[in-house]
Length: 429
Image 1 (cartoon, rainbow, N blue to C red):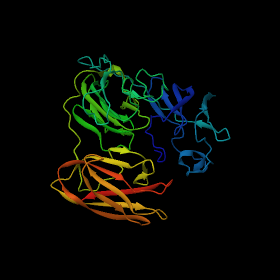
Image 2: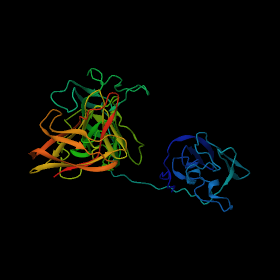
Image 3: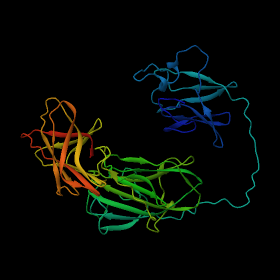
Image 4: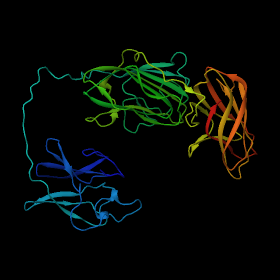
C-alpha cells in the first residue's frame, strides 16, 4: 500500500470517470492514488493497474507520482487524475492509454487469465432483518445561550443534522446563514438533537460530527464523542461501533458554539456505506436520547492543555501548540475551562508561559473561578523571557471541588499596539 497517500484497495479518494469496459470488467479512474481500478460487471473489486512494477528497467518515478519525493514533478503520470485515460482491447491484448504528465504513456495490461466464476446456493432459514426506513428526523432543541441552560427557545423536528451557513447543495435542512431559523442568534447558542437511529446493515459503523465548537455524542447512553471541553476542534470521528440491521438505538447530540459562522453535520460510514449525512429515513424523533453518562471532569492537578478551552471571548489564537490571548484596545480577552476537579484543595497555579524577543513582558492575566467576573484567585504576571518560561501564582484562597476556571488577559498595551499572553500548559498544586 502507498505510504504517502494510504487508501485501502477497492476504495476511492474521488472517482473521476470511466476508463473503459474490457474483459467483463469496468475500469474506473481515482483522482488521487489509483488512476485505473478494475471491477467486475456485478460489482466485485478485481484489482488496480500498476499495482506492481513491470520488469522494464525504468526508474521508480516513471510509475507512481505518489511514490515520488515531495516536490518532484518527473513522474510519468499526472499528479491529479482529473481526466481519466482510456482502456481498449486490440487484437486480443488490453492497452491502457494513461493520463500522462505532458506525454501519453501506453501500457499493455496483463493478468486477465485464470479468472473463474463460481455459483453457490445459500439457504436462509428466516427472512433477513432489514431496516424499515420510516424515520422523519430528530427532535431539535435550541437555546439562546452556549450552555444548554434553561428552557429551549425553539423546538422542532429536523430531517437531518446537516446545517451550513450557505445553501451550497439545495439542502432540505435549515441553513444557518443567520443562525438557526427562528432563534434570532447567528452565534453564541447551543443545540440538542435527540431520538433514535436505525441501523441499515449489520456492520461496524463510525459516526462523525463536523462543527466548530463543543460537541458531545451519545449512542444508547454511551458517550462516543466527548469534547465538551475543547472549543478549537471542528471534526470528530468515533471508533467503529457494531450495529444490528433494523435495530434502533437512542442517540443524542449536543452542540455549543461561539463560532462566527457555525455549522454542524452528523454522519456515519461503514464498510458498505461511504461517509454520508445520516438520512432522515433512519432517524426517529422519539424518546429523549436515553440515559446518558457525562464526560468526567478534568483533574486540575494534572497538566492541562490550554488549547482545550471550553469558552472564549475576543481574539484567541492557537499556534505551535500555544494558546495565545491577544490583548488590544478593544478590551480584555478571556478563555474558560469547564469542570476542573480541584479535589481536596490546591493553593497555587503553575503555568508554562511563552514570550518572544522584542515583546515586552509583564503581561497580567487574571485567574478567576466559575465566571469571568467570579472570585479572583490572583493575577499571574508573565515573565519577560525569549521563549518558554515557568510562572507560579499563589492563590488568594484554597480551592477544592469542581469549578470552572477563567484566564483573562488584562495587560495594558500602548495605543495601537497588540500584545499577547501565551501559554503552553498549566496545572494546580
